[in-house]
Length: 131
Image (cartoon, rainbow, N blue to C red; front, side):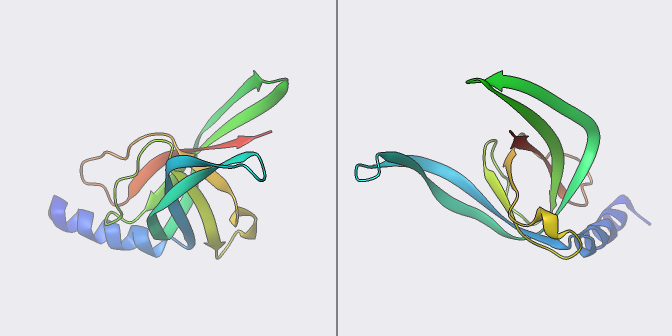
């Protein structure tokens, strides 16, 4: 089996394991509503489709800001190799999960690129901030 045929077979197998669905949005600006006196991000959808959330190494970082303590937890988001490239700070919302309903509605941010030779999926590092 060649590296190309093995990679292509791996891509099909990787997609079969993507039992969750997500939406990835890019923040394109901010608007201000004078009636509510609040700012809101304007977003553009970058990807809607299958995915998988996977923990990788034990990584937690605790930070204090504005009198609150936050814990940053890192995971990987796996999407098909055909998915577009995401940018740092793109926002990921899990919209469905076949095996873990606690994932639905969780929001993460893309923390870096997905770069790899012979990749079977795009694997983006993502971060979830919990207060």
